[in-house]
Image (cartoon, rainbow, N blue to C red; front, side, top):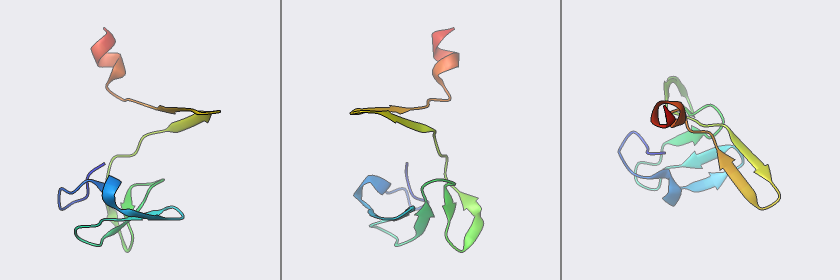
Length: 67
């Protein structure tokens, strides 16, 4: 997931359901992808499941690649 400024949000700070971009300081809701205070701006989000120590992230491109 990359912020609007192009930085990776992996370097950001997570606070509850919000992640703050380390570069631009914008805060994103990790569930909806929406920018806090500007709900019309959003990033792509993906469904995540955990089973013990296994974490699965949905990939919307998987069907296109496997066909």
